[in-house]
Length: 396
Ligand SMILES: [Mn+2]
Image 1 (cartoon, rainbow, N blue to C red):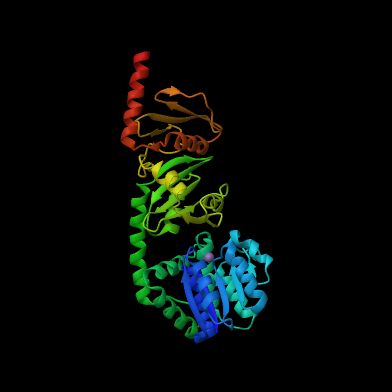
Image 2: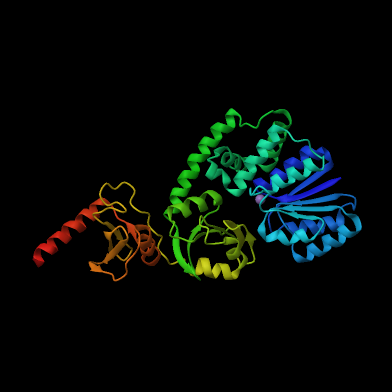
């Protein structure tokens, strides 16, 4: 008999699907949140048959269970942990640990891709096209490579995963991978996914209007409350507000915090680590501890949301040679203008600031980080210019 304890997300369930393809009725699969795994491991060690081989995928155990599993391995040899999280790399010290973040070709791994590789190399599962395609979609979704590759099927696979129950998803996928030569969505799923995409778009639009920004340590974070679509949300908010170093997503009901970044200069697994969590450089999570609650909820609750730049302007445009007008919640105006391509300045309430900036992006980043200002609509811009012209005239 086999037992698989895996994560309850797409990558974790991908491992469960592979286990069921390989072992059929000979495997018992249990999906866990990050926090429930350790309980399951203890239950296994205390209650399960000692001949049952244990796989742990896409998750890792605490220090105490690490020791217990190693003792168990010494007597039985019946455990294998497979993971791709940077925070689990120390499990490679054990014969029963296999943690790989990047493969030998420099491709980011996922638990599903590592487990597939393992099962095939151990001759426990025969590789086939449909399974390889499925595994690659899971990998691209989990590593976010799909976005660069514009592989929207990977995103859609994850959306489908959250639209139906885990049992239903498993059953559908197992049948499809057993029978099909290629991995495809059926017509009904396609229709469903189209509807879901519209829904996500509306959800993200709303969240863009709710986010607040706060200086936390050396970084500027965007803080938003959301129960769903954390990956999509973290990514869209990160791109909509690139002046934010990272995005904090608070799930109050679940008492969880998600951390996401689109930048390379921040490692959000380190930030999650400060609150007892972990994960990847670009996506991580932690519990909503007292310290996290104080930092992200108490200290930011009174802040006003940041505003998006005006989208449909014809005149007040970024990098324009006529200048670009910004405003903040205090109704202060910031007029960005350039003396040359390499020299940009700001008129703050009509007073030119001393600072010089080397590019438009630099000056805009400064404005957004320090004043939470946004690009105003054309009508405000035109009024500002007219007012300005009148003032100049009066002074003549
Ligand atoms: Mn994973």
